[in-house]
Image (cartoon, rainbow, N blue to C red):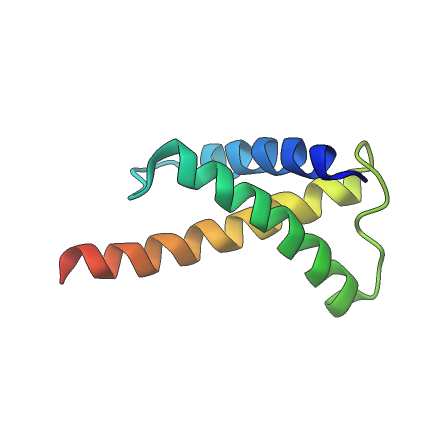
Length: 89
């Protein structure tokens, strides 16, 4: 996949992660989009390392989308934990 496809996939995965984890995020929509892009890369890497599968076969493969959404969910939860702690202090 090209870089443009990764950006589009990440933006959509970030939006889906936000729908699955509703609530107020400390960074807004821009940060959620960036989390989606990085989460897509993280999900692909985790799928390859942990499960030994090539989860980034193509844009329209289900495994690519699942990996990107799971990676985005992981990063969104971590971001909420870290940013939420800083906000309270």
